[in-house]
Amino acid sequence: MTTLGCVSRYASVYPLVNARALASRIFTYEVPDEVEKGAVVEVRFARSRARGVVVNVDGGVPEGIEVSAIERVVEKLPPALVDLALWLAEYYGSTPARTCCSRARPEAARRRSICRRARPRLRAERARSCSCRRSR
Image 1 (spheres, rainbow, N blue to C red):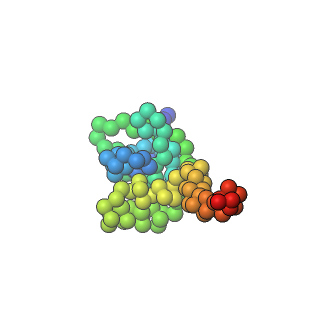
Image 2 (tube, helix red, strand yellow):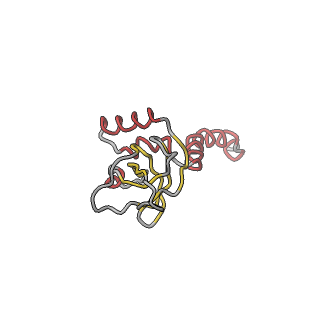
Image 3 (tube, rainbow, N blue to C red):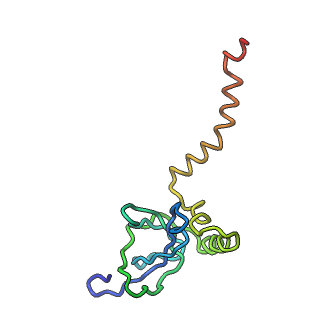
């Protein structure tokens, strides 16, 4: 899908989704010139939006596939980190989405996971300070 006769660039993107069948497949999207390997992009995926990690730029478009453009670039990961994540996925039999998403997930999800790790400590502190337990 080109615009105004300009040559488009295409990128191979692994979607950061939970479905294993989809998370292990590469999807092709049209990208602007500034997008490089390691870009975390927001894409239209099925009927919703999803994030994905660009693993290759200027790949060809598979025959008979209509390519969509990315929505926006969310953040950028170092290309070496993407290579490491792809190697980890292959070596340990995981999906690239699982190995990439530990760094490329939304900031709110990062905050929630930090809060979850802190909860057991907070519960223990609350239990120690609770006055109803002291009266027993």
